[in-house]
Length: 159
Image (cartoon, rainbow, N blue to C red):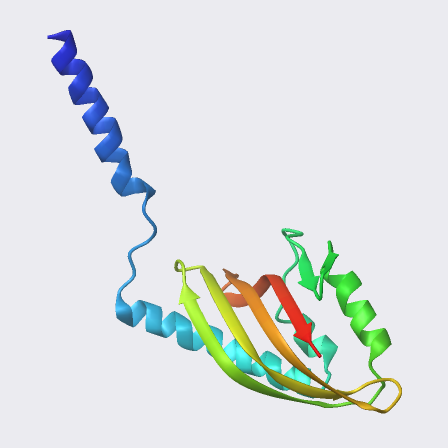
């Protein structure tokens, strides 16, 4: 009797909790809606980056978790430290051209999305010389107060 009760409890615990441990099941329609929302925010931020509008870009970021931001093998513990360096390296009035070659949006849940992208960029540096680079990006978005915000990013630039 004890053995069958033990086996029954093990089965309930193993299989009963197994369903609870899976991710959220979203319909294709729900995923599509979330993908469109995040893509719209991403495109807005790319346009702001082309204008080198760091204030606008910053509205799309939430650093509450201090998850860190990585750019070209440098780890920034705070978003503010990253953005301050970027501001100091780009000449006032500079613009850039960004061409997205590949982009993938992966909906992980109602509130978490991963966006990866690669492409080419051309920007004027402080010296006035154009700098042409290829980039690889990963952004983690979270829906915070009904708005999608980047909570972590990893950006690699290749000359």
